[in-house]
Length: 306
Image (cartoon, rainbow, N blue to C red; front, top):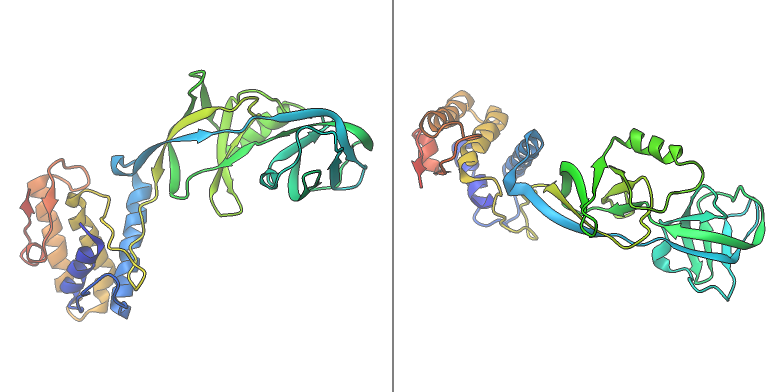
């Protein structure tokens, strides 16, 4: 079912005006309906794992880079430079990565100054050096913008067949501390999802840095797209099966019916239609047959199957 049909079904039951097109400027009543629908969609999304929202994805990691005798940094400074003889120079994409200097605890790269200069996120606490060695690596990677949560709790390294296990963020931090000052450069054993990158995407964090480029495969549940009304809107198709539409309408009417004069009657009509669907088709939240909701079906407490 498309969003505009769902909106108009609810609007009709409440005695509110119809939406002729999803790109119309919404009335205050239509805005209320959209807010109610999105609230219900989020609640359904959080309630369980949905096959309709499941996605299998791959993440390509970066490999750690290291070089000896080419780095200059002073104790108490956050400015790091490379000698012009360095093979592995800096890049703008290095911002957000980590750098370990002479086996120090890692510093996050805060800004790119040039191919031979960066700043780190805090003053260097080690011994000043003009011939330092460094390791540069990633410990976290952004997840897709529609990511909601991981499914199965396990990530597979395709090159080796090994699995990386999910742990709580607090456990990951403890694992990291247990490794000591030096960051391990090896295939990680654990990960946790926490924090956001600069674009607002969730981050997946590992307990060690990949020595080689790896392809990781994982499954996640994506967020259900929000219903939007207005000039820039698209009439999306709801991802949940049709048999759930009666449930969504029943819940929306329950939320909104207090705003209409015959609220008890309207709410009872939607509730009766939902209950009949439960009896005839098993619970819409678990039933296997698909049902198609129509406005007349809701008015008369019935629906038709397909």
